[in-house]
Amino acid sequence: MDFKSSELWGSSRFVVPLHNPISEFNARDGVDLNEYLAYSEQLGYGKTKTGTDDWLSLKQALPEIETAIAPETDQSFRIQRYNWPSDNKISESVVTVLNTPLGDHPDRPHVQYTAYRLASAINDSLILIGTPGFGYSGDLTTKQKSDLKNNSYDSVATSMLSLLGSLGIKSINCIGYSLGAEIASAIAANANDQIKVNNLVLVEAPRVSRSTKLERLSRFLLEYPNLKFAWNHPADSILRTVSNLKSSAPNRNLTAYLSSLFLDGTERTLFQALDRQAGLSLTLCSGQNSKISPLVANTRIASQLRLKFRDHKVRQIILPGETHAFAASVQRYAFIASLILK
Image (tube, rainbow, N blue to C red; front, side, top):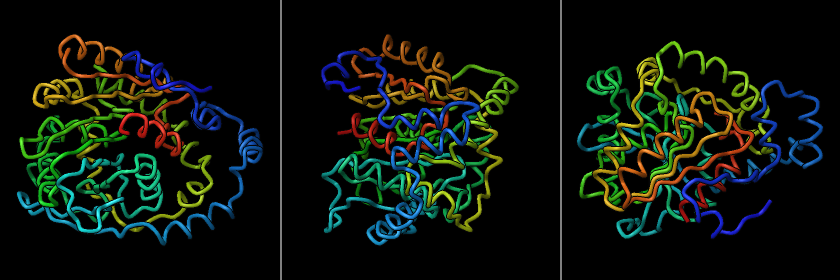
């Protein structure tokens, strides 16, 4: 199913068709594995050797993983810069900032591959930032741990903004999936006059609903079979190869982040971001069948924000057949990002 740009952007709420039909299998609860594998072979995704050879070739072209320091907090971050100008003069460019899900970090091959796909689709500068406390990024500070327990990502976001400023970045787009969506929204809400935020793209933000901790835990448990299946049987042949490559980097601060994910907060942060960032465009992207980022909650927030901020573009993307496991269909993830950010 194809669509024209005018049809796509003619409404503030739209459904994006399946870019890769097999992604619907990834998102369906109780899918028969033999049926899935037969279908993936038919579409050419089941050739593991091809995925391995492609990854080995691609790996040589990936930018190096660096360690950079945020001046304001002296906190270290693992970063990877894609499509960066050779002279390092980035102040005139709009840089896409990619924030990672819970426990993921730049040293993991599947995270690098996702960033590569996004950077290729956007065809512009992108920086992948490792979340503090995950992988080889620095530990959370005492203040950051306290803020997370008190339902705030602000001090995590301001440290990241300090890092971006030290690299000479003046203008950004923010995109994040799952926990990364919460951090991306906090970056937009805390950016000062020195860094302008143009686009904010939240994919499967987990804190959009107004729920008790018990209700939220129940939704996480209901979603787990979809996530486990998608992680273990990715459709993309390269992702199928690299998802089995584990890095030894530790995840030290899972508890602090998990405690924050059981609280509401996305709505308040988005009001703050739109209030502070003139011209900011917001896109809420969620799976039609997501338990962790429910469609009804995303729709409610999008409607409220449109009424309150009439001078801002607030869009909602609904992904048919998808749950919170959406990013396992990495090519479709990149395709959606390119539609929004190009």
